[in-house]
Length: 197
Image (cartoon, rainbow, N blue to C red):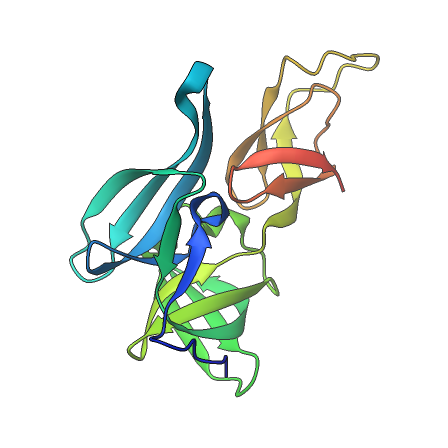
């Protein structure tokens, strides 16, 4: 078990550290982060985090801007190390790595995250008041390209990315030299190509 923080069960994090899957206490409610983007504004605007989040009780969504240096409360949750086993129709089945109990979560619960899950991927599933409320996937995953236009041999242009379909069904923009069958590393927070794997 994680240590409790003195003076309540909260941990403050800087907004710049907010990641999809995180749980935040904001406006007296618990929210699950769906997307977070680091946005730089020219001039004196500085940088901020654009965060799309969903109220875990009501299911409503909101978009919030936090200054990167803002401190945000992370909700205290029971985080369990689990492993993604397989997809069963519209459900995703996970196994608790300590007690081997299985947990089935519906596809919509994994909004935007299921495309990064391969069998045996280790994840952290957060429980709040005894129920699963969020999945934290690894910061990067390695997936195989199943379909993309043929690579250009001597291309050095990195500005013209092309769409590539991955083995999980998602599409990622990749550099022109990437070919079908190659494994690439993808940033799961941004959904972007990082490097060849």
